[in-house]
Image (cartoon, rainbow, N blue to C red; front, top):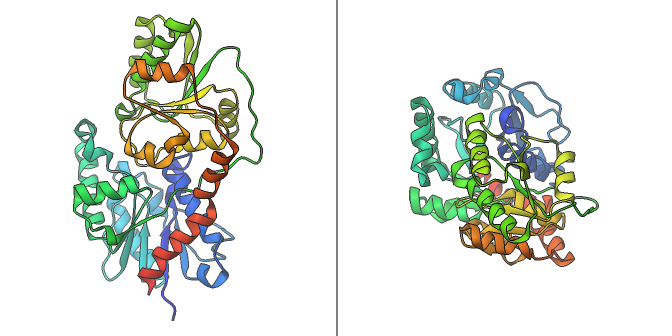
Length: 363
């Protein structure tokens, strides 16, 4: 009987589902859909609830316990639930995609997706977590160390895995995210220069630096707006609002929370540039999305930024003056850049890279 692989598609639902991890896993499903039928038949999907997915053609097994949020101790129930599901479909390999749900399985080989190691690089992040969250993360790191194969979302993450966890590069494959390419690119000028920050307001993303840069830009140019789009905790917004008030730019900064894909496209359409101030990223999705839509990108110069947006963006030091100077003259995005980005982060490229990984482990 051909060997079987069970893929966890749970992150496509719930809190992860809107963007980030959920979108990455949806890209894996799209990639599998690009394979010929005989390859597709080797892969089953694990979902929290019963689901009908044409790609898997009935090869979906549900585990209702996975509906419990991992951070509510759902990860404790995850291993036995996943183990039972794997036995039900006679899986030889399990592909774990949720870092919040570390899993130990006996007699089944594991592929584990690694998105980043930011909590290891940012001690304050781990210190802010509750004890059982930190314990779950340590189990996830051990899962990575013991994995038969690792799918990293970037070379930056792959390097971190080697440097910080001692994982050999020959166990790591790079499968870039599938990034949605718009059918048409619509650009519209805003009433004044409008800059877009897309993402969470986490400390490593340095949202306060984007605000400081806008204040610097407005001192020189007398106009300019900054729109924050993405999830935010009330205390995060409160601290940043206080910063805008102290800088006398509160009326020029908006915090818009999560938005739909259509609303995000509309925000891209009127953006003068996307500003990415993160000092650490595993990938950096908003920059790639912006370039695909013809929106200039200004990014703090990091390993991930060099890898993903590279010379197509304006890479700057991590200081407000340098960012403000770049905001005054954002580099236009050429058609050739958009075409190259579209190919590099396409379903076809992900399909080829994912199959190469699966082929090695399935034998």
